[in-house]
Structure formats: C-alpha cells, structure tokens
Length: 404
Image (cartoon, rainbow, N blue to C red):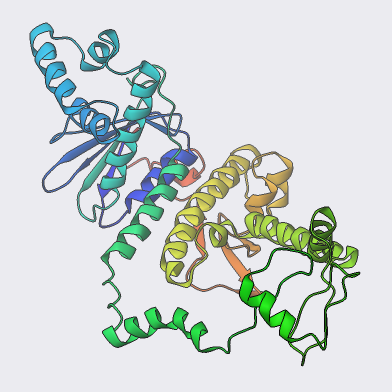
C-alpha cells in the first residue's frame, strides 16, 4: 500500500507526524528538483536515511571527521583500504580499530538526523510512502523519534535566524574612551588617611604623625583601637581570626522567614512549569513572541493527528454499533481515546456534534467556537460503513472494483 502527494499540499512535518502517530513501518521517498531522499521508519521512528547525491557512507565519513572521531589522514587510508578490500565501510572502520562500534552508531544516528533536518527545509517536491512489514537498518542503532527530530530542527532554524541577523554596530570611539576612563574616576575622591591598629606594625611616617598628636594619644590598654584623625572618634575593630569570619557569615545568612518565602517562591515556580508543560507544552519549548508562527504550525500538526485519532475511534464505534456516539465519552470508556484527547492541542475543550451519518469537531474558547479549525467527517464512500457504497441497481452495467 502506497500513499503519495506533493509538498504543496502537505508539509513534511505533518507527514512525519502522521507516520509517527500511526506507528507505520516502511520507506518515505521525497523527490525534489536536485535530489531524492529515502527515510526508513520502524514502528513510526526513523532508523535510516539515504540520498541520491550523498550516500550513507559519504555522509557518515563527513560526520566522523567533523566530530573528531576520524582524522583526514586516517580517512584517506580507510578509503584506500576500502577500495582494495571491498565490503562495507562500516565493518572496515570497526575491524581495523579506527572507530569503536558504539561511537560509530552515534555518528550514524547524527548523520541520519542531519539529512532529515536538511530535507525539512524543502518546500517543493513529491513524496511517496511505501508501507511494509520490515525495513533494513544498521543493527544496534537507536531509532530517532520524530518529535525529537522536529524539536532539534526548530532549534537549529532559530539559531540560523540569529546568525543571519546583522551584527550590532561597535560603540563610537568617544564612548569607548569614556568607558576606559570610568574606573579612573576613583582617583578624584578625597584621600583617606592611613589607619593602623595600635600595637601592630606601622610605617615611620605614621609613627611620626602619632607622636605629633601627643595631646590625644591612643590608649595602650586598647589594642583594638584605631588611630583616626582628631575630627573622627576612635572605632573598635573586631579581633582578627575566627570571630571576624563568624560575624561575616552571620551577616550573610538570610532570616528564617526570608528562607521560607524563597522556598515557597521556588515551589510555585516549579508548579507553574509543570502546569505549563501539561497544558501548553509548546509554550515551554517555544516561549518567545517571535516563535508564534512555529507554535501555530506545531499546533496544526498536532491537531491533524488528533482529528485522525478521533476519526478512527468514531468509525470503529460506528462499525461495532451501527451509529456514531452522541458524545466522546463512550469512546473514552471503550479505551479508544484518552483523557488528553478530549481537548485541543492548545488546551481548548472539543465540541462534538453528530448529524446522522456524519459528525463535526470544533474547539471552544470561552464557550464560543474557534473559527477555521473545525473538522467534519462522514461514512460516505467508506465501503466498510456506508451501505450505499455497495448498492448496485439491477440495470447497472458498471462493475464494482475495490482498491487497496
């Protein structure tokens, strides 16, 4: 069974999301103007990728060199040995001890991710998905979830936009000179007389000045007294050592009430992050205002996958009961839908309405329908559900053909 289309109608993230949601196994081929890329899926996760203009082995050697796992001279020797001995390049790298197999599998996974990220930038081309029971891939490779790859691609696109922005102009020379001169402003402050502890070492100039101020000698019985100018009173300095350090620690410590407030604020922030993650995970992954478009695209992809899941559940119910359910509760009770499936990806509750042999789903914001995101499905044309599909009049000459 094959599904095909063009990138003008379906975007690649949507296609990857649908394959992942349905846990399909098979190969997705995308043909562009200058290249053809094939992606292998195993139960909805990516396990291999190859391109016409760049084989897997060529891309792998580039990753090994860029990541520092293989030096250019070693790469030249490997290519020469590979041409002479033949076989697979991956086996040769491990057998000759150039790269350990676990590191080789990590590099192969990185090469696969990079190739698919490049493919996500395509805006034109044709795609075709071939469903199957199994696909070939390197044994031991950790499959790549589609959601993980889409998040990496979104982060890489944001970094590309940041790099593409023009650099900020350098400050004017006058401002630079003012910034350099700012630390020297302390030199204009009035000079502070030298202070020495009585009984400790002092310079000869300070000792002479103390003798000239004989009218106010420093008392010898107070070794902690500080000599100050006559206009300032003497200040007792705490003794050096552990007592001084202890005083500093006690001053830096927060009161118990402030510590409790800080813990409560940290707990409230953690609870807020959890609520955002459960209700609107896109806000946590892409919180910035300039990422509104990316959040909208992600919501569209998630909404399409949710509508597909609800449609499969509703038509399964129709096949068993002969009619659509009056609401989504029976689908949840039958295990066809989960609790999270009853809300839109943006957190809005879903309105479900049945009209005979069709139904409509639409999110509600403050009790009002959200325009432009509703979905309607019916059994028309479904040979499993639609009784009129197999109705043939006696005088009809057209044969009935069922297509897989």
